[in-house]
Image 1 (tube, helix red, strand yellow):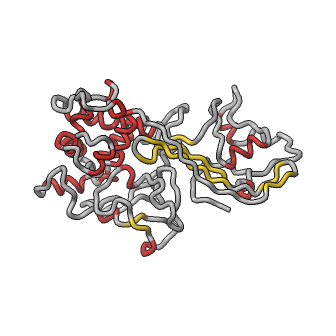
Image 2 (cartoon, rainbow, N blue to C red; image 1 turned 90 degrees about the horizontal axis):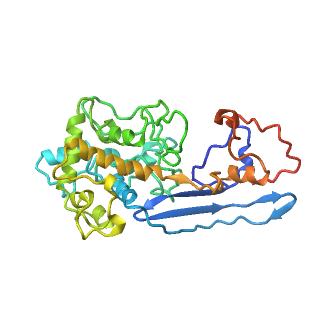
Image 3 (cartoon, rainbow, N blue to C red; image 1 turned 90 degrees about the vertical axis):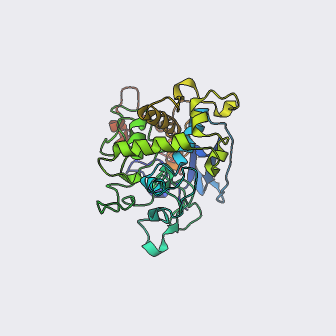
Length: 348
């Protein structure tokens, strides 16, 4: 039995047939609370004892996100930062009005396993791009050949808005964000080390080709994003999910009517009226970085990942679950513990 949820990649020497189906993902799925999804399929023998039938169940627990994380999620979902929305504004539209016609690349969700006529309907059809339109989670959970994702897309190369350069896809797909921010030596993001931090990645994305901006349009992109922040009135549906405050009120952080759950810490505030475009751009990128920073798989108190099938395989067989004190991650990932003798293995 398999489930459409991506978990940590097991080392190549563990057969997939042993990895039968426990996944735990702990990430923000909507405003102000975490969703914990636990899917269990146990058709297993533990040292000779049988567990008879598979069980599948879901568990949801609520936790209040810190204000900067909740604000980051709102910005992550904001659909007005893209170049397509600027075209609407240039034609006389208002920042707080809906688009009369959305970005056509969002009508369907590209899936490398399917022909185009079988692509699923896009969750942001009729709008312009946001971060979530490339980093999916449960939007296609019940759609065959789609399912759960760990903040990534289903394409080999992500579709991008049509512009004068004639390009229709990015140079890569959108990589998963869950666990992307784990501390490590030589911290870089994207397989080609394009960005050294989450804040840099956010700024590069908001002003980059995925959002419809061409090379040379960086300053135009910044000015547009900042205009959306300054002119937002807090009345759109997305704002209502996050307290109903305009970006100016929320990001300035001095209005006494802001409840504690949305009151940004000092280091995440900016005086939107007085600040420069670059200062506001930085104040947008930081909370989005804070939001993506807490997208992690479940871990125990010792920092061991503990709920994927592979994690349980290691635990059941008393095998090392992370590198030793003086062992490099490379050595561990290559299986330096393969010499361990498993005389009566527990199978997950």
